[in-house]
Image 1 (cartoon, rainbow, N blue to C red):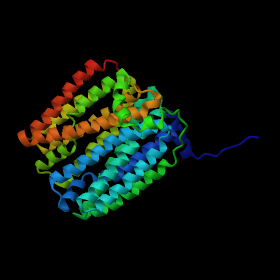
Image 2 (image 1 turned 45 degrees about the vertical axis):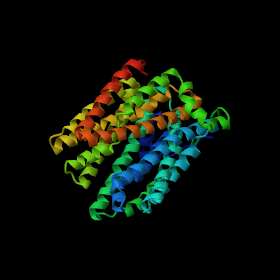
Image 3 (image 1 turned 45 degrees about the horizontal axis):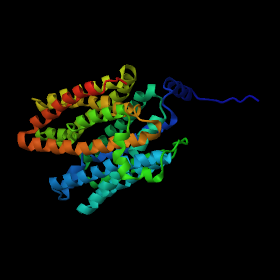
Image 4 (image 1 turned 180 degrees about the vertical axis):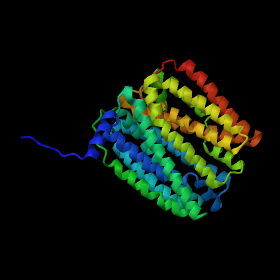
Length: 410
């Protein structure tokens, strides 16, 4: 019996395009869409979150404390739930519940006015991030071959960052029409978050080999000793990446620097959108380049861009130069974020991918707290330009260490 299937011209074009990128599997495309919609909701709020907290009477110190506790929770959750994902052989439940928890927690933040309730909401958001991140990145690695891993992580990061363009764009349009009306944005952010969670349910997960016992998976002693048991290549690379993270403070300092130059809040958000546009456009090509010439070379290029962009921003003499610095800075995460994860997954055994990525996520989160604290101290003591210059010099030193220790150009 012969079966004929009618396909429209549009469908044929779509199928032809997908054949050109066979490494972009159904699950990878779904995960990319999930991250994009989640980022629409998240990035809608990031630029206005400090302003909202200030409006309800929170001091800078209290805001810093709340965010620090929330980030610490996310850091430890990445390792704990990453190991649990490997032990159970499942990724999808962790991804689904992580995105769903974050969606509701973000909205709850905008309905909170007391420090305790805000802390609970922000912690829930970050716990959701910790719950899903290692399992999601491990699933991306599970779905890709080593020769295409840079492309896959680059494509996912591009889709993720596209949401970081759309979200702040919505925030700008809303604030132009409704100045100072922050709370409604928290409610709007729930919709893309729920859509992201729903798309996770469409993922088809294959059965994996499980490792260890339940006790081993949830033992904090095991989790913190993982680094010593990991492969030598993994340990060297993580050491180099964490060294750089100690100088890579929060991007909030760059936005604060722009504010000090007299730029309005709306224009700062527009600059942030421009940065994310560059990031989104460059992430996929950067992943393709990493597969061709090696992860190490592309990551080193990213460090060079970071140092140059920080110097330009720190000593910008005009708004035009400052905007150019932010645009250049957009190439840095495109060349490093997805590439570093793709590089790490090639140095982790198949049965420990979520654990290895979770450990790095935890350690880098803690180093980021140190970096932000150090930058804040330098900022208050010696000025913004010196603080940003130290970060730039740290990137250069980290690149030298990476050349020496991580000799293999994977």
